[in-house]
Amino acid sequence: MVNFFTFLILFSLLLLKPIKAQEGKAVIQQQQLWCVAKNNAEDSALQQALDWACGAGGANCGSIQNGGPCYDPNDLIDMASYAFNDYCLKHGMTDETCNFSNTAALTALDPSHGKCKYASSTFSAANSTTPSTAGIIPGSEDLNSGTRFSTIQVRILAFLNLLLAVVTFCL
Image (cartoon, rainbow, N blue to C red; front, side):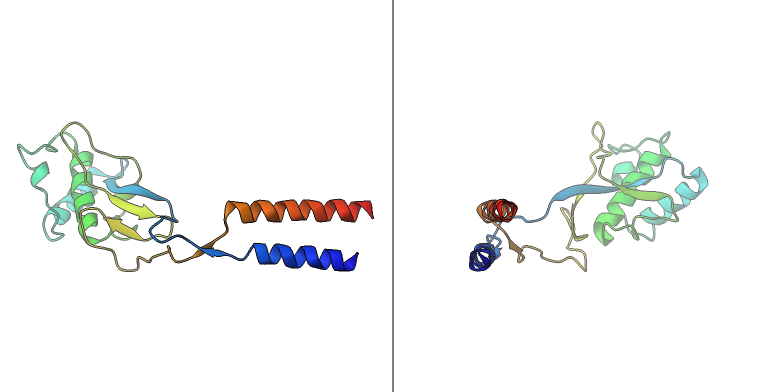
């Protein structure tokens, strides 16, 4: 009986040898991210951060200028969000770059509305970000070279474990 158990264990280990993930197939989930102004930020701090983003920060603020599709002088949060998001697309969509003196945060909710369209970045589960309108952020990594088990291998292992439990119970 010991030989039978040894055989089952060795057989299941051979069947469950990991296989390489297929080339070109995504292994990680991705979602879009935007950097937006916090709705509880003080107006004075928000205005100061907006001025910096559009000035020294180098954000493209043409869309929030008079006549632009995102211009709304009555909505400081929306205009700041547009500038913050543009800055982060150029400098990396991270918690550090999307801070603006604690007046901004990352979100997965698209802030676009009407004719005002926000560009987004794609965030992977491994904290690597590849902006769709900017360069790759330092520190991003390729996770597609890992190993995975096939569905059949997992089912065979489950069956063998069940068979082992039944045999053990019957003894």
